[in-house]
Length: 160
Image (cartoon, rainbow, N blue to C red):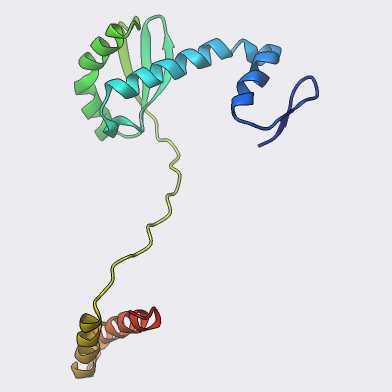
């Protein structure tokens, strides 16, 4: 992504974004808070198991930490770990006297489905083709025969 620097320069790298924010007067006031939130987010990530990865720091002010949790089930599990999290954050030098949770449904990025890699041996494909040929041609078997025929055809097209 390319954006314009306040002084007319072109900014093209993500690392240059901090430089851009630092130069812009209004944005520069936000930088310390952003850096502080990012630092406590990293501290929380190291203190919690990976299953809490979708959780994020919303706010940290007056020694109170507010965490966003994507659903109630994860919030219930995290609630049990709050004393340990608070102790770990204090051990790392963060003055955290209270941790609150807020269930906040976050937009999920759609992950591409993994490509199917299952391969049937040639003997299995032959056996399925034979089964398809020997199945009685009735309305009850129509869907099964169509599925077997599609699978055999797909494997033959792919040269398996």
